[in-house]
Length: 507
Ligand code: FAD
Ligand code: DLZ
Ligand code: SF4
Image 1 (cartoon, helix red, strand yellow):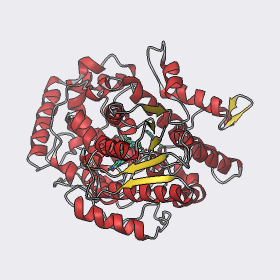
Image 2 (spheres, rainbow, N blue to C red):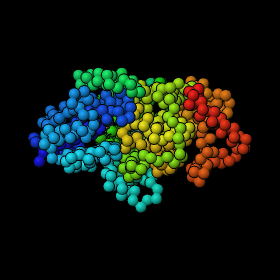
Image 3 (cartoon, rainbow, N blue to C red):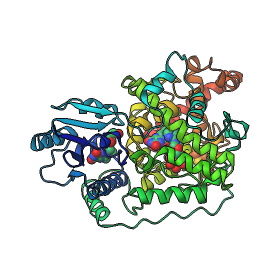
Image 4 (cartoon, protein in one colour):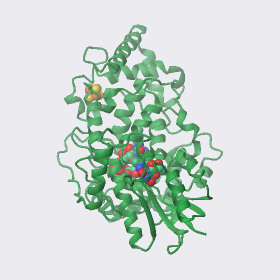
């Protein structure tokens, strides 16, 4: 019997369960760069370059440890272009009798890989802290799932920020302290430089040649592409930025992409870093007095709570989840998401940052591009394809629940207890964007009124039947119901004018 361990581009870790089951001397490890994966959405060139370079470095590392590694490069002449065609080729050539793979991160890949001509053994992805059966068990018999209760159970189970069975500091969550804007802050940590070695240089040339038609700029390229480099990124975050992570988690600034965010999602999701080690590093920083509890708890909640929770939701509800469209939203994705002209400074700036860095921090994804798509009624599947393409940390297991569920409420409340809908006032409070904008965030109906305002109230009015009974929407409907019929009509007309303007690129 000869086994093949197939390692996907987002599984670059030595602890993989599928690697543990093979015999180094006899069995094969296989990686492949294929057109189907690189083009099923128009991935950002930085995302493709990061993954191909990280895959090649990891393959080299395994070969140096004595594994028998076979690697198909994107430009190999006989590259068949998809996972399964490449796998069948190796199965035939190497007389493989069994394929071992760690649970893929996307439904579509899981379904396809089971079609191979030899038995396929799917191993649990032990990088995650909550296994899929454990999540099913958490979800069983509950009428409504909420992240907060899942998170508390995870804190207890993994004994993180706990003392004698109680949360450190006496509370589970310090989110109320984490809502400051950062308009007064001028200095942020300089990014670590990562040198471009021969492997990365070859990949950059390949990506420039084959993917220049994809949205996004390839250069400058400064991603960590090995575990060692990713660990340096993590250490830099813990020592320089973690202390401020909580306070400024929701703040947004023009020309400042990262603020105090960790920018570690690329490395976590690709396998270069592990979630538990990051939680432990953050906990230790608190115990050493390097960062306050609100910051450390906030950071740990994202990883131990949200990240594990969205994965559980994805696998619990797929494949039907991807089709959900609670509001029946059907507007095509406007060109401004691909850098088309817009006078809305916030949208222009977030799309610009995204194009440059293949990154945008959580609040920008949720409250700018996500909020706008929700209010304008853009088709959820089109929005999800955009998020999957443009962010270098995007894989469907994490992108879909965040976009379709959290940002668009298209799942009708599985992920979020209410839609994250907001008017221009929120953006004015949490960013410095409005100061550079042609629109006025305090105006609802005038010529220069912020488009988010009429779209927000139009969304509230239009979806009254679906949302009014939600307790958390109470104040919005008290205010909507207080408005005169004339004002409500004026809002609807203004929103129609804006929606038309979005299509003809005059907004
Ligand atoms: P930090 O703010 O420093 O947070 C620390 C870590 O916590 C992140 O690295 C990430 O691993 C984890 N995390 C934080 N929030 C979430 C969350 N909501 N879900 C899962 N993990 C979380 N995250 C992705 O990794 N891939 C995606 O494709 C993705 N798509 C998103 C789409 C939308 C519409 C929204 C609202 C959020 C999305 N997120 C996604 C979650 C979040 O925005 C990113 O994880 C975060 O911005 C990554 O930057 P960071 O590493 O600096 O995170
Ligand atoms: C995102 C991506 C891209 C662009 N290319 C490849 C590839 O050529 N080979 C590969 O193994 N993985 C790639 N990936 C990551 C996969 O899309 C990801 O592993 C699956 O979607 C499962 O999450
Ligand atoms: Fe965005 Fe409105 Fe502020 Fe302009 S005024 S930046 S459109 S929120």
